[in-house]
Image 1: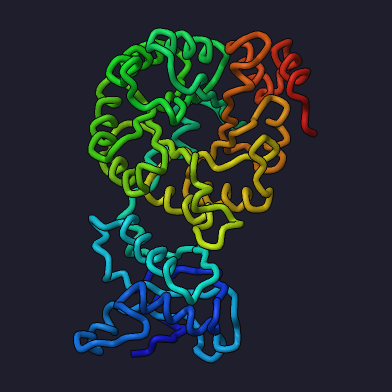
Image 2 (image 1 turned 45 degrees about the horizontal axis):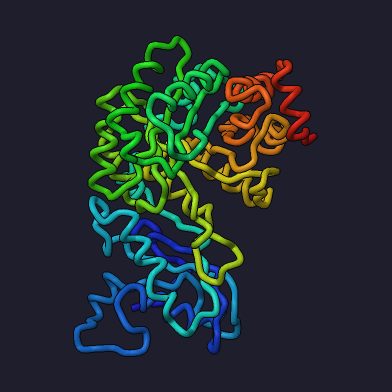
Length: 396
């Protein structure tokens, strides 16, 4: 078998790109350990069951000339994972990640190993539905064009009754928001269960002339998430919100239900594996590509200029990736009225300006904070906007 081949048939493989730093060996040895160890077995020990036919079918291929890696200790390498090793109707992204980011974490060959890109052949992409709504659907639903969406986050994160939450929602809608997201801490507490709060809020929103998306937090185990998604739809809800700790495969499972729901991907905790300073991990941009394939409509992409202040270049790459998959990026964690137009200049207008503290902490209350954000987006500055700028400042 040809284990090193820069001219593979790309239709048969998912190609993973890594940034690797080898520990006590050259890059060729580190890449071999990854390719063989993550496909057919122990990179250093062969056995009687490993036939030539098996290697041809299931072994990874290193997409480089062998000699070019020999004298390097670090760099970017591409490894091709055979599509045939995965049942794409059922294994999906979860099993793929087990292959591309699995046992190499335990191999002494590596000082560092980061997955920085995944390339899929057309025959595999067809197994993923992509967003049901995305940018185009959200614009059509809300009637908001050529400007960012005004988003609000429920605060406090948890502790409110369904009736108190409904009162907050009414103030946010009166203030002009397009999108409301429950906090990821909410889920299904006994004092504000999904079965109680969703009908209350959905009935109110469905009675209004302005269309507002309300993402219900349904975090939980997979079986409960699927049941909760169906119940939200049954009660007339229009969106759900799932944090990534539920497992990336759950987004694909929910999307396959084809419910009339926007799906929001919440990223809190992602730095455990996406932090660029860590030796081992996955670039956030890769997660965003996978999220788009699996069918999320909106995703907390990051933030520029807030208390979360992502690298501008990297955030722009992330936003471009999401736009290419018709996914709406939400910019959040420190967003306020004085940052809206600065972010428009940096990234265009296809994003949700998602706000918690700067809405609910506004001097004129929640409704005043929502109006300040509406004014910042529409460039129709009133007293609510002026008070917000006085409190949080303005970024040119």
